[in-house]
Every structure is written in structure tokens, then in C-alpha cells.
Image 1 (tube, rainbow, N blue to C red):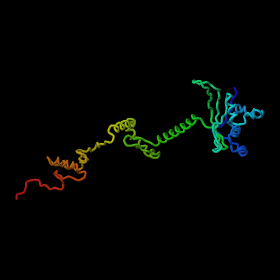
Image 2: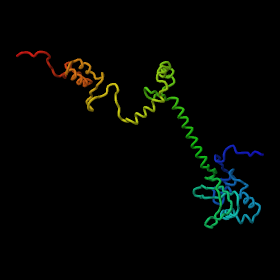
Image 3: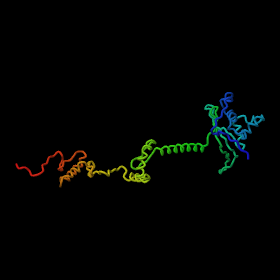
Image 4: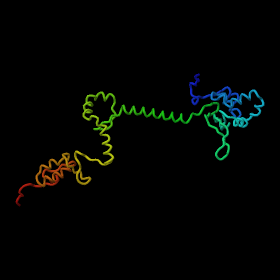
Length: 284
């Protein structure tokens, strides 16, 4: 079986023009645009248009019958096979649209009317002296999807190389030099954490969905009404000192010591601004 030579550059990536012809016969008109397109690499000489062009060269009577574009297109509609039809265009804009079609003839529709059975194979644009082929929709979508997937893969590889998730802290970006410097210490910490990152991340997400904006301090939780700043742990400041007092004074000292985060309480359990004598009262 003979091999078919395929063009090195796809037709939808090819730009054709003939500057010498355009300088002589340009700008293009509805009478000359098909003649100019016939010289391009996109034209198939075995099409119905190529057959009629050859007949016009050797038979003057056919040249008279196909003297105008309307007469030429009317002859094409009576034939079957591959054809090139001028769809639209104007000399003012200098843009012309030519379609490559497969005509199978005339068929009868369900309502009884006769319609043309024509399938569009390709579309070509003539802009000034430049002729190019419009790409297929599938090729455009495939190119755009390939570009997006390639960009996502490169971004994912870059993000995976610089991002490091630590359950005890947060997601940090560690450089290669920092990783080499902390290799000895990080090996011990990673061994203690183990592979818990896969377990801690879903747990953290579940806690966030459950409590959302609510936060609490496990070391020194706040007591009382909001804004009272009373604490129940050793972080209460003067509470430990106030606890040294006995009886009710020690309890009051612990309470006031909670405020000791902002000011220090007295040892007797009373505020620092007041003086209270302890012992037998003096006789007057």
C-alpha cells in the first residue's frame, strides 16, 4: 500500500499568499476571489470547482455560461461531490469566507419539500492577500485543555516541592538550605510526630466545622462572665499568692488574684488599696 505524503505543517497552521498576483490583480472582488483562492495550497484540483475551471480554459462556450459567480454557483449546485462555495465577503472590508462542502444532491424532507444535502468540511478566510484555514472546534478545545492541564501540573509540582505541613504548627515554606541545616533536628521531631499529618488534618477540619469561630485556652480557661478576666489555673498571677491566706481571706485572695493579671492582690485577701489590721483591736 502506497504511503500518502502528509504536509509537515498542518493546514490549519498554514498561511498562504501571493504578493505578485495581488499587486497585479488586487484588491479582490467577488469575480476574482475564487481565482486567487484556486492558486493556494488549500484548493483541491479534483473538486467540482477544479473541473469547471479546466473546462473554462479549453471551452469558450462554458466560459460564457459561467461568466459570473452566480452562474458558477448555480452550476455547482447541480453537481455532487466536493466543492468550494463563496459564503460571504465584501470589497469594503477585504474579508472573504469560503467553505469546502460535500454535496450529496437534493433530498426530500418530511414535509415534502426538497432540500440540499450539504455537509461543511472546512472553512477558509481571505483577509487582504492572506489566506488561512479556520481550525476545528475540537482542535481548539483540545489545545486549550492541554495548555490548562500542563499549567496545573507545573503548579502542583512547584507547590509540592516548597510546601511542608506540620501538625504541631502550620504550613510553612522551607527552602532547600533550611532543610539541610535542620536535617538532624527535624528527623527526631518527625519521628515523634510520625505520619500523623494524614490524621491531624481531617481532625482539624472537623473541629473547625464544629466550633468555627469559637476558641478556648486549655492552659488557663477564663471564668465568669465575658470580660471579667478571672482565670482558674496557675496563670492567674496573684491567685497563687492569695491562696496562701486562710479561711475566707484566702478564697477572696484567689478571686482577686485572678485580676492580678492586671494588678497584684494583697496577702490578706483584701484589695491592695485597703489596709486592715489583724489581731486584737487597740483599746481607746
